[in-house]
Each structure stands twice: as structure tokens, then as C-alpha cells.
Amino acid sequence: MTRFQEAICEKLLLSAAWTSGSIVVFIFAFMLFLGLPLLSGGHFFSLLTAHWAPQQGSYGILPMMAGSLFLALLGLLFSFPLSLGCACFISVLGPAKLRFLLRKVVELMTGIPTVIYGFVGLFLLVPLVRDIFGRGGLSLLSASLMLALLIAPTMILFFCDSFDRVPRSYLDAVDAMGGSKVQKLLYVMLPNSVHGIAAGITIALGRAVGDTLLALMLAGNAIHIPHSCLDSARTLTSHIGLVFSADFESLEFKAIFACGITLYLFTAVLVLVVRGINHRLRRPL
Image 1 (cartoon, rainbow, N blue to C red):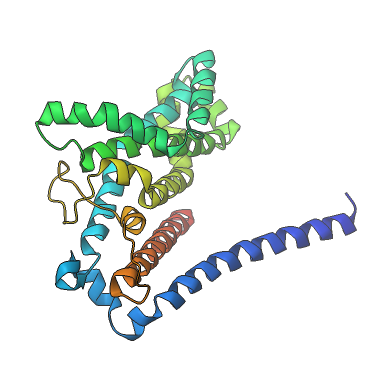
Image 2 (spheres, rainbow, N blue to C red):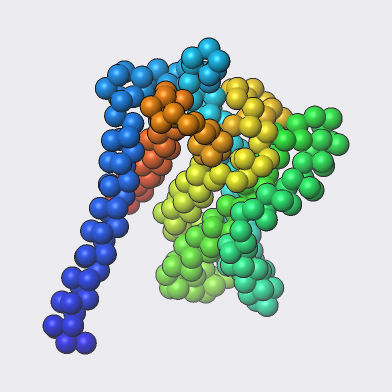
């Protein structure tokens, strides 16, 4: 490749980066513009702390914020051990043929539509949870278990890729000293894959917070702050999908944009926090 071609490729990649960043900023500016009456009227922060009771003139999104946070964290709690275990098996512990087959299955799972997970959860998982606990069919527990299955392939592939990037010389040194596969995993691969694991968790948590269908189909859509994983709940994304208003000037309609701004800011803060942690971990002791 000539110097001219390299310069053209560099400019194209730079343009793509600027375009992507500009689109993200434009989307946020669009939400701010439509939600400007909330900010200028002082309604935005009151919506964050109030409850949803349209018949009483209250359009707060606090229950939906709590539902989104609880569902995402519960799904991540269920999914992380499963994902890390599968990634360790695929990368190190399993037989070669089975590792290859399992990785292909995980890659296939990333392409399954979310609605399929929702149907499986609705007709299989919900009755099972109801039979075991006597209640809580459509609940945070059902939705989080299926959400854990949804985000697991993303985390598994991120974890596997981070394991694959461990320098081969490190692994050869463990083999030369007679170390076992478990020792190689615990003392070499995991410590050198912290950044990849953190990236996988970030992407999975962002997908869990932004998922709409599973929360809509399995969480029960009850508008209250959940106190148990067997309680029903409504998330911000499902609330946006469910609230319809013919009056675009009403506070009920504008509350949707408060949900969107909250989701956007939560995701941005999450990414910044994880990047900050990674930056601190990269500093030499």
C-alpha cells in the first residue's frame, strides 16, 4: 500500500469516527430539545423522584428507573458466573473438539431474535417459576433469568477474545514449569484479561438496561418499586413502548423523553466509570 492510499484510508476511518460520534451527539441533542420544556419548567428532576399516577396528575418515572436497575443488575448477577465459566471451558479447560463446537453454538446464539427468548420465557419459564414459588410468574426473576441467557453470549465471546489475547509466551512459560490448565487459567489468563472482562460486562450491562421485549413480555409491567425478585416491575424501555398519548404537549408524553435522557446518561456514566477503572488498572504500581 502506497503512502497516498494509507492517507486515504486514514481519512476515511477518521471520517467514519467523526460521523459516528456526531450521530450520538445529535441523538442526545434531539432528546434534550424535545425534553426542553421539562428542563426549563423544572419538571425534569421532579419526574425522577415522583411516582407514576396519571389520574392524580403525577408522571414520575422513579418506579421505572428502579425496575430497570434491578432487572439489569439481577440479570448480570445470574449471567456473569455462567458466562465466565463457559469462556474458561471454551478457551482452556474443555477438549478441543467440544470447545470448538461450543463456541460455534455461542456465536449462533448472538443472532437469535430477542422475541424468541421472550416466547420461550413466557411459555416455559413463567409457569415453572409460578409452580416453584407459588407466585411471581411474570416477575423480575423470570425476566432476569431470560435476560441472563440473552446477554450471556456477548460476555462469553468478549471473555474468550480477552483470553486469546494473552501473550503466548506467558502460556508457554506455565507449560514449561509443569503448570496445569487450572493454574494457567487462574494465575496467568484471568489476571491478564481484566480489561477484556470489564469491557464484556459493560457491553452486557448496557444491553440489559436497553432491552425492551423481555421486560415487556416477562416482567409484569407493574408500576411500583419492586421489593423482591418475585415482584412485577416496569422498566424505562418498556414504559416508553407502552405509553401512548394523543396530546404531544402533555406532561405524560414529555415523561417519555425523561426516560430516554435517563437511559442515555446512565449508559454514558457506566462507560466512563468502566474506562476510568481500566485506566487506573493500567497504571504501573
